[in-house]
Length: 416
Image (cartoon, rainbow, N blue to C red; front, top):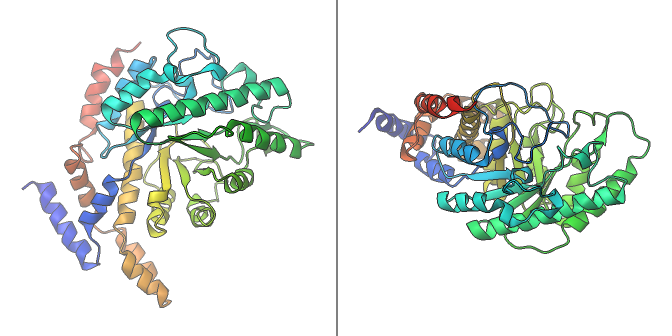
């Protein structure tokens, strides 16, 4: 028996004293499938040959080894998945199409342009999620897409959304698991607009057109934002707009941890929106002073989100994805750090003494409620995590960085 096994057995005994079944928590954690975002690996460049990143997005840093081709990106993803316990999905953007060098406009994309991604997903047993790309394009240079006042430009982006839903449906059919198709647009004004109503009415009509075709094997999601670079004063797709749209149209609502005011916590929003919606998509990110998409760490905010999913019994109704891009560190390590941090937060939530907490709250013993939550922070959850990694045949903490450094030397370091 290894040291990890011994530590895990002692941890199980300690948790059992509080009425917590640590082994059941690990079984529940093993069922959690994160959607890992492809765009961390290449700084949101995609494979269309775009000269600049648009839509108010910004990637900082120039760490060597950025993926330049789809094959390199898949290779990097394989390395990341090998260091993340569990079986997880891939979240893909439309600008990552493989067209064989041919120029294919976004409104003309088809499932065949993603065949190699689909084959890779099937070979590795991973599900796929998808996103239309409403940025880094000449027809988005003025900051408007689905709410654009020009009918022709707006129609182009509607057709792009329709094409992407069909691609996602093909992905879901091929992998045997529905693909979540998430719509985020950068539309908005840098300074105070006169007409706030018109763009939102156009956006609602455009979304209705995008979603008009009934499709199996895919789920529609819409994502809000408070502000962006170049849209500081007005964002068409605000939280209130998309909350109303998702409720009225029965769509999945996407809550991005970086898309709200720094004092807002999306953990509190979950129980509110779940009163009206069947499912929610989470984009776990980390904003520092603004929506800066830092690599996710085991922060209080991430922990609060996972606590709420577990305490509210929302885990099975929630799609959890990552969304950040950092080019100042090893990009593969960024995937691993963020995914492992998210899973750790979920594990800590699953190991809470929930029955004792609920009992204390039901009799208004708020002293015990607070004491139990604080004491839980010092319980040996790290030993449970190490055992989970070993059971999933993934290096435990302190051991995964060495194989990553070898990959950096053997693969990333050879890229010019």
